[in-house]
Every structure is written in structure tokens, then in C-alpha cells.
Length: 135
Image 1 (cartoon, rainbow, N blue to C red):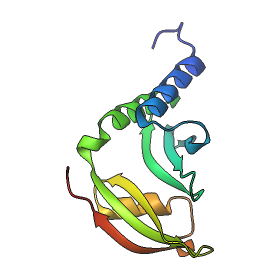
Image 2 (image 1 turned 180 degrees about the vertical axis):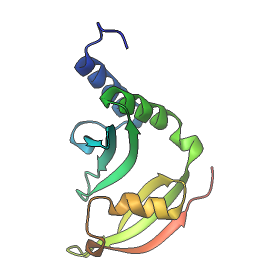
Image 3 (image 1 turned 60 degrees about the vertical axis):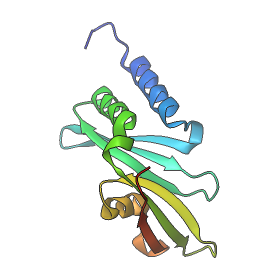
Image 4 (image 1 turned 120 degrees about the vertical axis):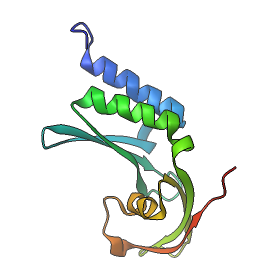
């Protein structure tokens, strides 16, 4: 990396590219960075504005903040070609309304991991997980 590149400016630029590519911005897309064993992990989290629930979109690990952001940008540019689409119907323990959420994942277990990310598994009841047809 060039020494003249401002890490914060470059981070903001890549985050904007990710937001633009996904069509999600503001408080509906959260970038959570943390250090794990000399690596940086980025959890990209989406917040559904209708039912105000958050879900994991994707996680990446890398050497530093810019590395994981670049990996995440590469992922969002190609995930539709690499992963299957799943529809999950679920209900929150505190709610009486059936909700439908959509996930891209390698398999249904990964889709459920994204649904349950950051929460107690007993707070959501899953009624169905459906692999969507390829269009």
C-alpha cells in the first residue's frame, strides 16, 4: 500500500462502494470490526427496516481493516454467482407476526447461522427454510 494513502479515507471509500453495490446504506448496514488472533474480522450486518431485526450478511478475515474491506467488496460483487438463495420464515418470541427473510449462503445451515447471528437461539422460532430455485 502506498504511504500517501489515508487509511480512513480509503476505508470510507470502500465502505461506500459496498453500500452502493448492495443498495443498502445508513443505519441498515453495519460494519463491525474486531481483532482475532492477530487478524481483523469484519462482520457485515444488515438491519431490516420493517421488523428492526439484524442479520449477518457475511464475515471476512484479513490482515488489517483495508484488507478485510477489500475482501468484502470482492464478495459483494460476486456472491450472487457463488451462493444459493434461501427463504426463511420465522417468528420472534416477543412477536406474533410471521416474518420472511432472504439469505445467500452455501447451505441451509449457513443461512440459519446468519439468521441467529448475535442472538440467543431461543428468541426466534424458525418455521421453514427453503432453497429458492435458480433463476
